[in-house]
Length: 114
Image (cartoon, rainbow, N blue to C red; front, side):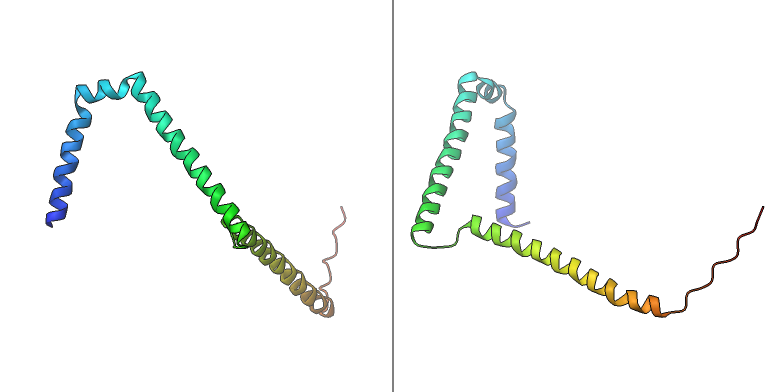
Protein backbone atom coordinates (compact mmCIF):
# COMPACT_ATOMS: atom_id res chain seq x y z
CA UNK A 1 0.00 0.00 0.00
CA UNK A 2 1.45 3.35 -1.01
CA UNK A 3 1.85 6.33 1.26
CA UNK A 4 -0.91 8.14 -0.62
CA UNK A 5 -3.30 5.23 -0.06
CA UNK A 6 -2.44 5.23 3.65
CA UNK A 7 -3.11 8.96 3.89
CA UNK A 8 -6.44 8.50 2.08
CA UNK A 9 -7.43 5.71 4.47
CA UNK A 10 -6.58 7.78 7.54
CA UNK A 11 -8.41 10.80 6.14
CA UNK A 12 -11.49 8.69 5.30
CA UNK A 13 -11.59 7.24 8.82
CA UNK A 14 -11.28 10.69 10.39
CA UNK A 15 -14.01 12.12 8.15
CA UNK A 16 -16.20 9.16 9.05
CA UNK A 17 -15.68 9.83 12.74
CA UNK A 18 -16.51 13.52 12.34
CA UNK A 19 -19.64 12.79 10.28
CA UNK A 20 -20.83 10.18 12.77
CA UNK A 21 -20.45 12.46 15.79
CA UNK A 22 -23.56 13.76 17.54
CA UNK A 23 -22.41 17.36 17.15
CA UNK A 24 -22.09 17.00 13.37
CA UNK A 25 -25.49 15.33 13.09
CA UNK A 26 -27.09 18.14 15.13
CA UNK A 27 -25.43 20.79 12.98
CA UNK A 28 -26.40 19.09 9.72
CA UNK A 29 -29.99 18.61 10.86
CA UNK A 30 -30.31 22.29 11.74
CA UNK A 31 -32.82 24.15 9.53
CA UNK A 32 -30.35 27.00 9.07
CA UNK A 33 -27.66 24.64 7.76
CA UNK A 34 -30.16 22.88 5.51
CA UNK A 35 -31.32 26.21 4.10
CA UNK A 36 -27.71 27.32 3.60
CA UNK A 37 -26.90 24.09 1.76
CA UNK A 38 -29.95 24.46 -0.48
CA UNK A 39 -29.00 28.07 -1.17
CA UNK A 40 -25.43 27.03 -2.02
CA UNK A 41 -26.66 24.33 -4.41
CA UNK A 42 -29.08 26.75 -6.05
CA UNK A 43 -26.38 29.41 -6.32
CA UNK A 44 -24.05 26.94 -8.00
CA UNK A 45 -26.78 25.97 -10.49
CA UNK A 46 -27.61 29.61 -11.20
CA UNK A 47 -23.93 30.45 -11.70
CA UNK A 48 -23.56 27.50 -14.09
CA UNK A 49 -26.61 28.69 -16.06
CA UNK A 50 -25.25 32.25 -16.28
CA UNK A 51 -21.85 31.02 -17.46
CA UNK A 52 -23.44 28.63 -19.95
CA UNK A 53 -25.61 31.41 -21.37
CA UNK A 54 -22.57 33.67 -21.69
CA UNK A 55 -20.62 30.95 -23.48
CA UNK A 56 -23.53 30.33 -25.86
CA UNK A 57 -23.82 34.03 -26.64
CA UNK A 58 -20.07 34.32 -27.19
CA UNK A 59 -20.05 31.23 -29.40
CA UNK A 60 -22.90 32.66 -31.45
CA UNK A 61 -21.10 35.98 -31.87
CA UNK A 62 -17.90 34.21 -32.92
CA UNK A 63 -19.84 31.77 -35.12
CA UNK A 64 -18.55 28.77 -33.14
CA UNK A 65 -20.19 25.39 -32.76
CA UNK A 66 -21.99 24.82 -29.45
CA UNK A 67 -22.93 21.64 -27.57
CA UNK A 68 -26.49 22.10 -28.77
CA UNK A 69 -25.28 22.24 -32.37
CA UNK A 70 -23.28 19.04 -31.90
CA UNK A 71 -26.24 17.32 -30.23
CA UNK A 72 -28.52 18.30 -33.13
CA UNK A 73 -25.94 17.06 -35.61
CA UNK A 74 -25.62 13.74 -33.77
CA UNK A 75 -29.41 13.31 -33.81
CA UNK A 76 -29.52 14.08 -37.54
CA UNK A 77 -26.73 11.61 -38.29
CA UNK A 78 -28.42 8.92 -36.19
CA UNK A 79 -31.76 9.51 -37.94
CA UNK A 80 -30.09 9.36 -41.35
CA UNK A 81 -28.30 6.14 -40.41
CA UNK A 82 -31.63 4.57 -39.48
CA UNK A 83 -33.15 5.77 -42.73
CA UNK A 84 -30.25 4.31 -44.74
CA UNK A 85 -30.66 0.98 -42.90
CA UNK A 86 -34.39 0.97 -43.71
CA UNK A 87 -33.72 1.75 -47.38
CA UNK A 88 -31.10 -1.01 -47.58
CA UNK A 89 -33.58 -3.48 -46.13
CA UNK A 90 -36.22 -2.39 -48.64
CA UNK A 91 -33.74 -2.69 -51.52
CA UNK A 92 -32.63 -6.11 -50.33
CA UNK A 93 -36.26 -7.23 -50.09
CA UNK A 94 -36.91 -5.98 -53.64
CA UNK A 95 -33.93 -7.93 -54.96
CA UNK A 96 -35.06 -11.08 -53.17
CA UNK A 97 -38.66 -10.81 -54.38
CA UNK A 98 -37.90 -11.49 -58.10
CA UNK A 99 -35.76 -14.47 -57.12
CA UNK A 100 -38.66 -15.90 -55.15
CA UNK A 101 -41.07 -15.31 -58.04
CA UNK A 102 -38.74 -17.02 -60.52
CA UNK A 103 -38.47 -20.15 -58.38
CA UNK A 104 -41.17 -22.72 -59.10
CA UNK A 105 -43.83 -22.56 -56.48
CA UNK A 106 -44.52 -25.72 -54.56
CA UNK A 107 -47.99 -27.07 -55.16
CA UNK A 108 -50.13 -26.92 -52.07
CA UNK A 109 -51.21 -30.28 -50.72
CA UNK A 110 -54.74 -31.16 -51.72
CA UNK A 111 -57.30 -30.60 -49.03
CA UNK A 112 -58.97 -33.57 -47.52
CA UNK A 113 -62.69 -33.40 -47.69
CA UNK A 114 -64.75 -34.23 -44.70
